[in-house]
Length: 122
Ligand SMILES: [Zn+2]
Image 1 (tube, helix red, strand yellow):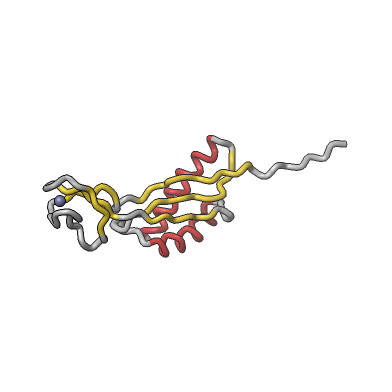
Image 2 (cartoon, rainbow, N blue to C red; image 1 turned 120 degrees about the horizontal axis):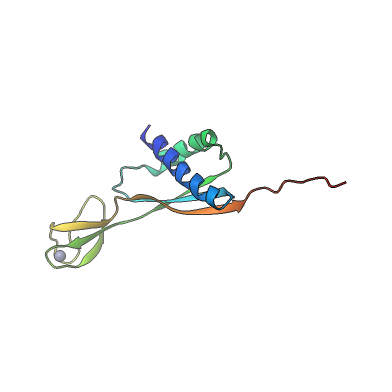
């Protein structure tokens, strides 16, 4: 499953950052573009499996969806377009380049202090 391996690498990245900060992970925030080929519901489903395997059963996944943005090579304007119609919003040219919409990135993490350990004194 494609989404499962994505979740594993997200959790690996998150673990490194959390370890550097000696913290636990409360939430992992990812940004997904409509052209990334990643399906948000499948990713969420895969995450609930992957977090158990990674030893983060309480970590939540938050998915943010980006929009498709293009820059026109003809007139230079930037537009936000539906993902099935990559045409310039100003001049309708198809000579465009993608600015965003195909990304799948670890955007941010919410870290928490690791639970304190109670030590009996006396
Ligand atoms: Zn244009």
